[in-house]
Image 1 (cartoon, rainbow over the protein chains, first blue to last red):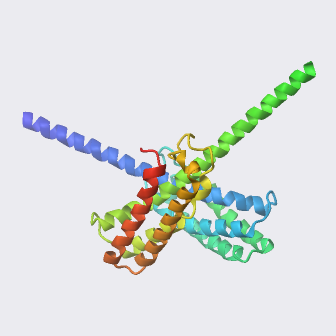
Image 2: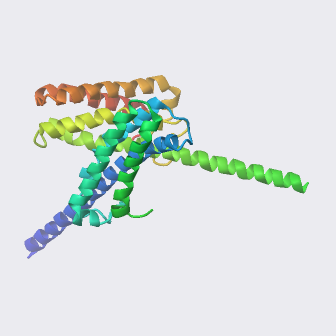
Image 3: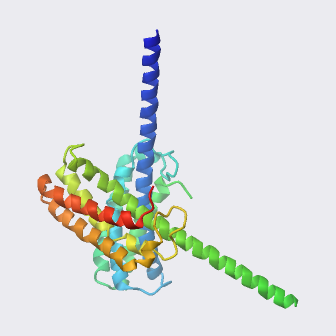
Length: 151
Length: 151
């Protein structure tokens, strides 16, 4: 009986450990994807300010930031681990996982449009940049409207 | 006298507003650099596990993560805004700003070594990767030892 109790206790401890570990993995996934999007946002905002004329257009800075956003857009997908919608810090709606192909398609749109922006930004012509910058913004918004919890 | 009081009050409000704004900018800088390093760490760990043999070597995954770290290593510098050592969430020691050239040099070492790693990782030979992976780890550690608060 004592042995059975010990086995039961050990089993419970293992299960608790596993749950704690699972939770920690979920939190890691959320922190990862949120970090990627934070770095994207940080680089996106000065480009938006240049496009809007709020700050002077700096061709080199714009090209660097556009290149970064194109690189970063390829990083967050693995952070969208199923079952992590309700985890602290997450802004993801559960619909992401019930419409996974659509969600992934929207992220691929961002990858495509931001790669195009990086290419055009390298040429340093703000007038040519503007429509492609809008296309990137539209790709962001299209996904946020559907799959991001409102702030 | 009333006008003087009003002017004083307005001045105080402006100063408070300016301080609040400055704090917010500092917090943004810290969140940005911490996010970049978080994304670096997330991509670095599976490479470390492959090098140590804890998980199977996957040449394509390793190359992708090495490329990401090389890209990300070029992003955090602008987040090291002077006077942000004590801001919540910051792990930066004040010595960064009193030894700025040394700090920047260490970050440039990371940029160089991680670019080399991305290059060798693209060839898919783990034995050739190992020493260069160690060089990247050394670049990380060299800066952490000097300029990162211990966890």
